[in-house]
View 1 (tube, one colour):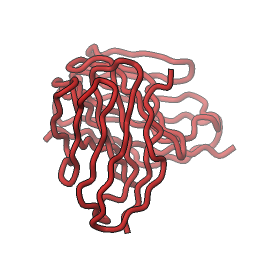
View 2: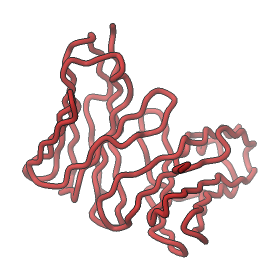
View 3: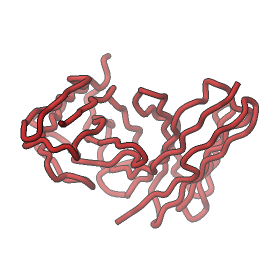
View 4: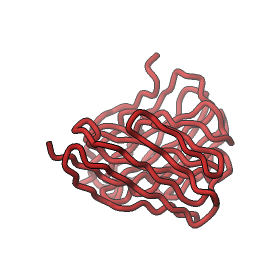
Length: 111
Length: 114
């Protein structure tokens, strides 16, 4: 079945350093979504990418969708302690609106 | 607007017991789903519904039943709890089925089966 792989599983950074997490799918995705889950919380929607090669920015966060619509990345510039949490990518399987989630990248930020 | 409401927040069951996890949304969303989250496994889809009266299986449906008698409610039933069902369960909804749309998650139910 369709799989969405996400790396790295963990990332520890010093505050102010950059952070990137990568997402790869075994099949072409209809869309890719990114979520953030704070410790003890629930996933919260960040952004959705639909078009091949699409790039979107939210303040210090930059999201990219690959040309083949099989990969995506989330880059955070100059991390802050408020960025701590687990970041999940989720790929649309093109039917019914179901999302296949990656296993997430857990980000810790040392002040 | 409460969004997606899940009850209970915590539950402890003994092996073989049954229970229902409740999920309700007040956003008139068409699509509703249940995920389980286990350490290192991400979020895995259990069951989903694209509208009242319509349900279907996700990636890990065994041991769970769902129903969607109204647009608002989507309960998840554990028929005979097993320790392997110890997990955090999230209900999520989106406004449109069959199309890319953000998922709105509830706060989760932390279930322990002993």
